Length: 283
Image (cartoon, rainbow, N blue to C red):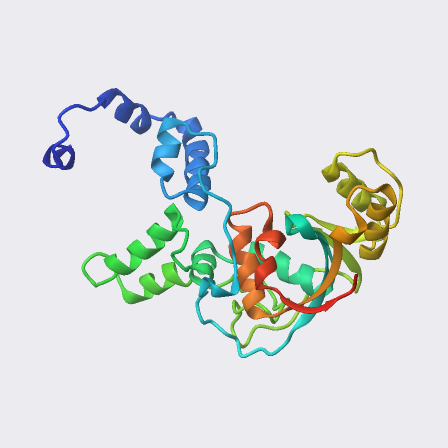
C-alpha cells in the first residue's frame, strides 16, 4: 500500500486486491499453475493471472544462429542428421524423420529443471516473466537476502535428479560422472511434427495426424518422410515444386535452439529452421 501511495496513484480498486489474496484453498493450486503458465508465455504474468487474460500475448519467436545462446558447450563434436519435409513458399516444416538420438534429445527436455532450462536459453531478445524472475536471483544474491551462495547457485543452475541417465550428448545438462542410458527400447525411426508431437514409424496414425493437420480426409499410407512427400504430390495439396526434403545437421547449438523454441512456441521446428545447418537437399 505504501508503495502505491508513493508512486502517486490516488485511486485503485482494493476489492480486486482482496479477491486475489482471499483465493479459496481449493483454488490455490489452480492459481499457481496459471501463474507458472503465464510466466513462461508473457512478460506480464500477474496481469494475465489477475485480469483473466485468455489469449497468449507473445508473438511467435524467431530462433536463429544469431540468437546468441549462452556458451555452455560440453565439448561434444557429435552431430547427427534429420530429414525435414518443408513447404518452401511458407517456410514451414511439416514434419521431420529422425532416429532415436533426436527423440532422446527431445525427451531429455522434460527432465531439465526450469532454472537450468532458462539458463541454457536466455538471450533477452523476448523476455518473459520467468526470465525476469531468473534475473532477480542474481540481484538478490549479494549476501543480504539469500542465505548462501550455494542457494543462489541451486536456483540459477539446478542439477538434474540423480536418477536420470545421460540419454544425449547434445545437451549440456549432465555431470561428467553420469552414466549413459536411454528412454527408448530399441533403434527405430520416428516422425516428429512441427509442434514436437512424436509418433513411431511405421504407423498409420502418423499419416492420419499429418492429414488432419492439412484438413483433408484420412488416407492410409506409409508415414516415412519420402512417402509423405509423394503422398502430398499425388493429392496436389502442395505443388511439387513447393516441396523440399532437406537433410540438416543437429549439434549442441541447434539442440539449445529447439529447447528455447519449445518453451514458447507450437511451431518449434519451423521457428528453428534458419538455425539448422543444411547438409543436403534431397528433393
